[in-house]
Length: 160
Image (cartoon, rainbow, N blue to C red):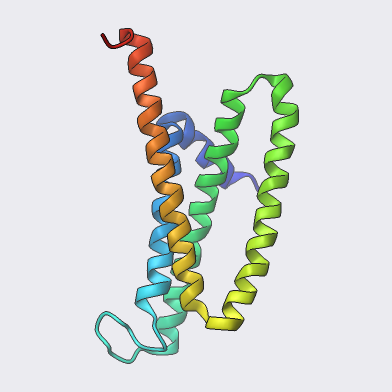
């Protein structure tokens, strides 16, 4: 029952926040690329050859598996990172607030994706998800750089 969380939690302990978060974002990006570029109106857009419905279904399932693993990596790394950065007193308030914000964002995204899909199909939806994934990846990369810079300054002293 708790196997994915157990495995991802051990990965977090072994690798840390940034590698696990970037792995999740990379897998999410790979899932979206499969959905965007591998299937386009029933043809493989890379070779423009007709593919069977079985191949399209297999690509869809591969994308879903990648997306599931990605969400697990992202959710576990953020939850554990929040726990590591807060005191126990603060965590009792921040953890439920974090979960509430995440579920509200999921509900809003679901509503917007339904509207987007009905208006313009899956192309806009996939491009929007790719854009959001890119923004989150860049933001986390910047956070990683600042964190490394802070650790270096704390270890070596302020630059002169």
